[in-house]
Length: 81
Image (cartoon, rainbow, N blue to C red; front, side, top):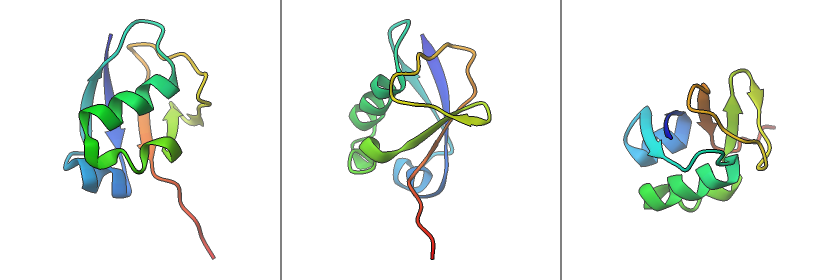
């Protein structure tokens, strides 16, 4: 399945794009997406284990199964003071 993934903040800057396409097997999980992003965009590898993945308006766990029509967004972890 082909997924369109929106990248934000440092993830967008490192990948050099706001949207990327990732090809994954059917029934792939968020964990698989993180691995694929790191493989396709090596500059994202340091962020990949900690990327926050949102599907629609909710953050997804590593075990969440993805679907081709999912609205997927990736955010690097943030901290505040």
